[in-house]
Amino acid sequence: MTDTAMCHPHMLTSLVIIRDRSEFSHRSTVRNVALFHVTHCGEEGARFTLDHHGFGPETTRSEILEGTAARIPEGATLITLAPRILERYIRPSLAAGDPLPPGDLQLLQRLRPDLHLLPLECRDDTLDAAGAAFSIQRASRGSSVVARARRAADEAQCVWLSYLHSLCRRSDQVFFTSAWEAWRALQRARPVPF
Image 1 (cartoon, rainbow, N blue to C red):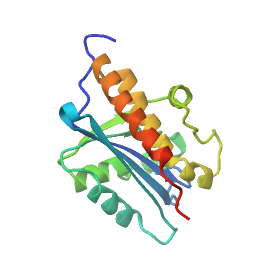
Image 2 (tube, rainbow, N blue to C red):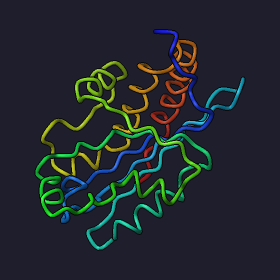
Image 3 (cartoon, rainbow, N blue to C red):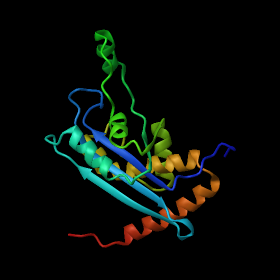
């Protein structure tokens, strides 16, 4: 770890949005949103919560993003994977002289200017390594929308773990990983509701 390692924020939310197509496609719809919230509680440890919702095609992007924005704690740092902008979506806008339509993160920032947005450039193999290191099953490349939606909460945790173990101080890595492992053990011990 270098001297530039950062402190883990007091409140952090890891966001994963599952779509049926790229967010820059005009036919894209949001199918699932997962939010993984991490709150540093001082000497008492850390608190973790998962917020995972699925949506039908009738729910608008605006409704989904407004609901998502409302569930993020005030003043939190929001981490998410930086969107991959494919050339086939940019080219028509550039050729017509039109501005690119706003992305999900831009719209969330408009709704919640109090948030500190941190889009992460993270390769799939980095997320795979985080998942493997902590026994989190990720949806495989090329998985269906349903399979990716089912694993969205796990993906949000992998994004957070990748952030924690690549950008944060070693002491924060140990502190938050230990607290998260304890939380995860309690989650697994809960009875399954029927």
